[in-house]
Image (cartoon, rainbow, N blue to C red; front, side, top):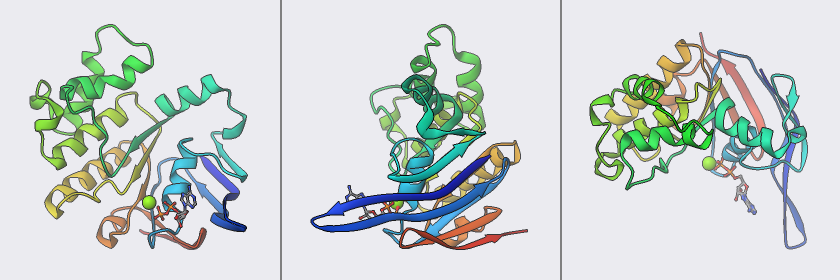
Length: 224
Ligand SMILES: Nc1ncnc2c1ncn2[C@@H]1O[C@H](COP(=O)(O)OP(=O)(O)O)[C@@H](O)[C@H]1O
Ligand SMILES: [Mg+2]
């Protein structure tokens, strides 16, 4: 479970304070698929990045499975980023010169698993339908395929939470649908998914839509 309380992110621009997050309250239960929507600049990425410890808040708290994130030691932060959450970004961020396999194996290597990683890597690649492309260089794949590699990389350590920031933002509608199908499948398999999107069709695939405006949550709607 993720519990966000009174979360703020303040930037001081010149003499003025600007709140990218302005007192966010949010509880996400295990097994939910939450879409976070809202206009550009409303604070969606900031919220997701703080949950993933890619950014730090200026106030309030995020508690994940009972542990407050700012209380984690640097070593625990590294483990959290590597194993508890899996991040998927709009721009994929693959290593272009590595193979598909090499990209997906990276989080395992970073976690110190330098032996034979075939079982986990192959399972992740099969999940996204790219096992056949294991030995191709990442840069030779289409955008949609690259995003599927990024999802395989995000799930290879079997994280509890998948955090996706505009995962379909650079993709056409056919490839977007494939990505959304994979995220829905992962959610059905038990993963908690939090996805930032400004596409209403993609948001409708979630089972809850949280809307942000000016750093605040302005609507929170469950979908049957
Ligand atoms: N380093 C920064 N300094 C000042 N303002 C920032 C900085 N980073 C982000 N912001 C502002 O915080 C707000 C929220 O940004 P963001 O979370 O990226 O929004 P979203 O993902 O909803 O488009 C935006 O207005 C953005 O300009
Ligand atoms: Mg954003």
